[in-house]
Length: 318
Image (tube, rainbow, N blue to C red):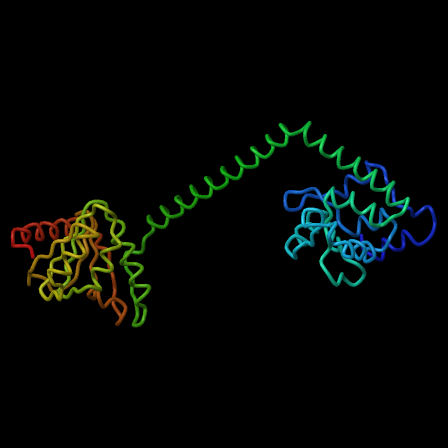
């Protein structure tokens, strides 16, 4: 109800006098900041005064209205209350209010009757107090039911979250089943290339074998995305890694082994000895120039590649 509506109801005939029985007052009681309150414009209607005069009287007696008696709504609280009441202009006057509405608690409403000093204010305050008492009785008598309803809402929310998580897992699995066997990255797509390589490394559950002629700490940044406990063996001919680099990596992401070999020209990434990828660029340079990543779909070729690497493992590790 707007200020203008309140004023029109109080300006003239007895037919427009505000109802003051508890049944009519209870719908005007709202919960804000965990407290039961009434808005200034509703109180003005009941007290048969203008909203601005009601608030002015309270402001002139500020010492009688501490924060737990009277407070001004925030913009967010006003919007939430408008949604709760179900009207677009709750708490606003014609053309909109110039200020946010004030909320009065039960104690603040009791204090208003003394500040306004009218018979209407006294009688109205009595009716409002009865409405607050009736509201408390209702809440007390139905506390168990309200708690049960709250529990049901919480259970439904938890079920919804669980269902969403399950659907997410299903979609991720579906995406994995339709993985593109070939990917091409163009010059400048370094982040996209890094993201894919990190994702591939993270899929390994036991071991990772990387064949790359040129590795450095940038390569280790990708290998660090592996799961805990997954062993990594790097086969390289032109490594710029020092023993200190390897030791630092192993201190946080064990266990990395570097094997020297000149037997390979191309780059390969093998996960758990079963899934192999042919990579057209060194991991450290992925995305700097155009390159491709191919899933080796011939299981026989993957097996031959793994066997070759197992023979190389007999050589000394750095």
